[in-house]
Image 1 (cartoon, rainbow, N blue to C red):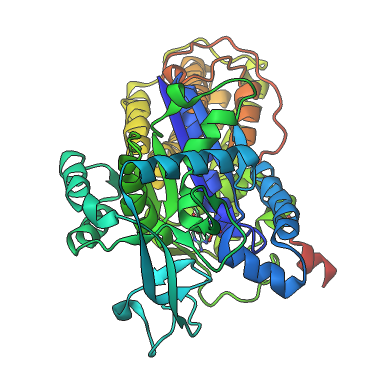
Image 2: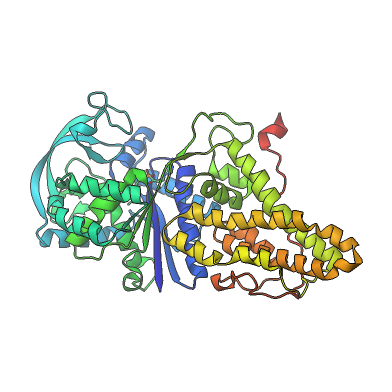
Length: 507
Ligand code: ME8
């Protein structure tokens, strides 16, 4: 089976920030999890480099849009590597191969009769690269997102007959109740469709920075149409000398933030239908990470800078935090204080300490060999169905619920240590058998949770699995009892060491 996951392609008009890291991390979790399930995975991310947002930002800096793209695409590529994302390709919409596919697909849409010449008159936000209706404006004529005053635009351009796809889209939503997840976004997209679809400008006459309209060199393709097509074009040239389209299209899931729902849940499937290309299986939508009042922080600076957090705490901690703190699909606040709190209480204490105590006790009481013993049924029972539950949650793009299911078992193992007090058993001559069972149960429980945590915290979970002498990483191996005792343990080092916040030490 093939699994194809994408992130939005990010605008190069600004530097990457935590919001961009968030979607990339989430997509990486799905990619790694599906590889553990034995699927053939393709994971795509990249940059959106045409259009007005980039042109205007470049003008401000006194450089060309291409120069700005070259400069910032590097930073987005670095961000993906920094968070340990395993993307198979990094697409840039300035890639000539992408531009060729855009020309080809819009020609097909044109030839299929879905394009006509018309005049656009209305509001346009150059920062959103989006057309606004009167009812969307705030304070008279301001963009509801950027709060900048919008100009009324009038220009002759080419239109895509989006209105003709109202019925096919409604049918798609009726037939596939999980086309958009979570449900609240499905309903939002469907009511947008039912509210009536207006035709959409396919080209811009005034702009120079974009893919030329194949049949009219005086105009460029509207940046959103150019950008959306990245998901399709990438497969044709990502791997040299090979076309992966047949293997990976339609995409399994496009992960996006709720800001760009309309483009992905309405315009994108309509464009694909117009070009007679299969629509994706699913669009997975997450909420906003909010910074709230947390403007200043001793340890992490003004905002949560993903580069800085990774430098200080490591990428696993950042990956864990963003997916644990805010329920995926919902909005939620993140803060440096919240980060430090979870780092200490959950990563360092609940997981890191559990691991080091378990390994230390196996070293001290059993000469470094995991006992060959039976685990207590009342411990084992907590792991029944866990791997299946994680799969089911991740299939619904519920990344936080899947992580929580695993973390409840981490907490369960901690409670088990407290209940059993193995250090007391070790002093009691009659407690040897019970101690074997407890130590095996802890090692096996840690192994299972670590296999399931690999997609979330690949480096730490891998180090612990290696220290437990565990060989398998597949999801099949994430069953409690799948591995018996006998492994020789190693030394993982401190998984989540105490960190001196940088500013605090300078103070
Ligand atoms: O919209 N919280 O690019 P973009 C959560 N180029 N996610 C956030 C976020 C936040 N505070 N801020 C950004 C574009 N994101 C287009 C996309 S796709 C064909 C073209 C994430 O640079 C989230 O995934 O503005 C959001 O949808 C995306 O960055 C917007 O990135």
